Length: 197
Image (cartoon, rainbow, N blue to C red; front, side, top):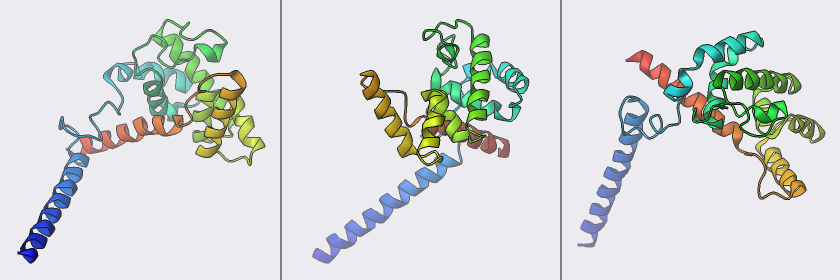
């Protein structure tokens, strides 16, 4: 009887692990399915942001960073998901109070221009530029003073330090790079899988 219970438990374990693996594999290769946890959970570019692609392309090319159009759209997803007229949350980059910009085009123009500045300041390091977009351009100087290489740990330290200096509960999003790249990478994966079908 004891052997039978052990055998039954082992069999159920194998079936459970097999089911989990099949679920993960089917999720990865079925981007159109409603149940897909990785690709259909609002972690891809929304139709609202996608509708502004011509503006993202226009201002990215005007700033000489046309190759970052998709990344800028992923950044806008992290900033607002297209639910605010200031879709890139770019008002503060102009020295204005938050959400002062009331036009998606003006937001894309200002946000793209600011992203170019942080890209130049970061020496072309995309991850450092993204985090500096969120924290402010001074984060690039902080990284230079602390080894010159962007790390997640430095982002956390900077966030904690700034929050303490300002007396705030928190400062920015120290995981901003991962959050933006999640949208970017999932969108690229979705596009690649859609082309195959």
